[in-house]
Image (cartoon, rainbow over all chains, first blue to last red; front, side):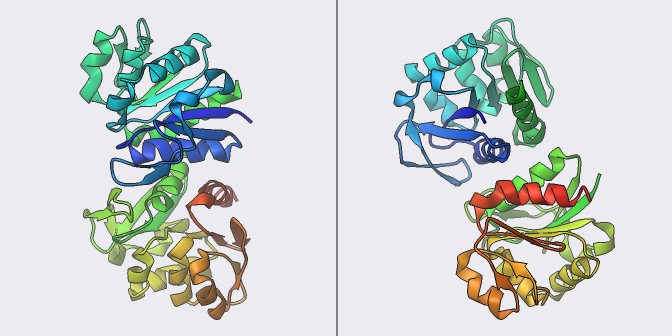
Amino acid sequence: MKKILAIVDHVYEDLELWYPKIRLEEEGHEVVVAAPVAGETYSGKHGYPCVSDAAIADMNSEDFDALLVPGGFAPDKLRRDPKVLSLVKEFNDAQKPIGHICHAGWILISADVLRGRNTTSTVGIKDDMNNAGGTWIDEAVVIDGNQIAARTPKDLAPFSKALVDALKN
Amino acid sequence: MKKILAIVDHVYEDLELWYPKIRLEEEGHEVVVAAPVAGETYSGKHGYPCVSDAAIADMNSEDFDALLVPGGFAPDKLRRDPKVLSLVKEFNDAQKPIGHICHAGWILISADVLRGRNTTSTVGIKDDMNNAGGTWIDEAVVIDGNQIAARTPKDLAPFSKALVDALKN
């Protein structure tokens, strides 16, 4: 059993949090949802509520085996928090799996972990991903080392399968 | 690869449709979402949109290997449609897997397929399930023959795993 950190804020993409979260739980893993405030209800882009388990400020990357970053508009806020960026860098330096989908790429850009990496995201931020030193590829799932990227909710099945597989290694 | 029919209406429970749908697709199966009108957008209880693939009136149980009935308030409407009830009876008579969760039990009650069966649902309709001849059990997933029942979105991981397993047989 592994422990996965997911980070959310208001207007997270509902299924991009919940599908991988429940899928990882199906495998017996634990997913901790951290947000700016612990125990607060965050509303998805389409309205699905998520009560946060913990505050991002209290999180320690050493306590987790992988990081899940859902998209939506939440990453636009989360990328401004230096603690979020240091967490992303720590997971990346430790080569722990980081799953990011859709607009979540914004956070990896600001954490400056995309240089030299193949990656993907919603086509809306393709230019941002390339400008940050990544090589944006139009595929459902792009895996480069510890980074597992997907484009949109339509890619959730293979994206989550890739996360499950990464945690088996 | 198997073909699964899911039936929805307005105010379906968002994750109770989408989690099993994507999970079954991950296995390579096809899920057809039928609703009163084909190609219309149905909004989940929390707002997640679903564009229906087909109209319930056009569905034929012989074209499918299993039936998925999400909960929410949608079953309150769907149980009034004789075509929905005849579809449920046909899947049940053919002993094809029927997955139902939360308030979806209402539809099985009106299709009169619960007599003598162990089952579960949201506790809110426990009395209705027992009055229809079922034996309501407070467990995450209750399997009785072809019927796979679960209580709430919290049970989605084992519920969907049970559906995946049933389609392997």
